[in-house]
Amino acid sequence: MKTLSFPGFGKRSAAARRSTREVIETQPSLEVSETENEVTVRLEAPGLSEKDLQLSYSEGFLHVKGEKKEESEDRKRDFIVRESWYGVFSRSVPIGTGVDWEKAKAEYRHGILKVILPKLPAKENRKNIPVS
Image 1 (spheres, rainbow, N blue to C red):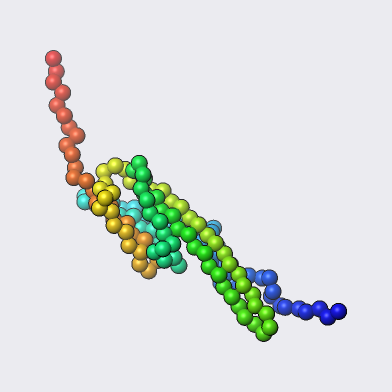
Image 2: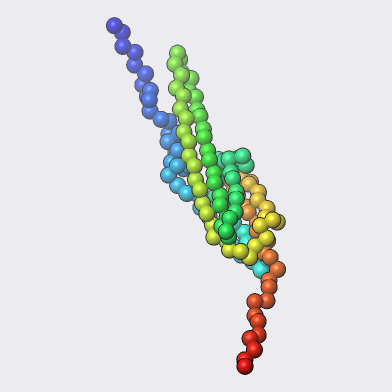
């Protein structure tokens, strides 16, 4: 019987290991800033596309979910090595109730998700209480 040897067969490439670590083992970096008129959330999510991201809100929280599935194929001589990996992240950001969720905008460019949440007009919460 002849034994066939495939050096490196079954080992994941450096690129595959690096991509898996970046997606599965880390949470995306998050930055929240506020001005007088809006709240801005920036989330670093390189390597994704718009269709890989889901945004929602509930009870004063912005929820961001990302999902990445990749496959690679390496053809050498008479054999093929195929690998696939999968990663998911989810972040919930407390924003509060003072934003106009209906006017929220999101854009994804160059690996950065930017969500702009306009604030609702400030209401005067001060009320005089008569003393008797």
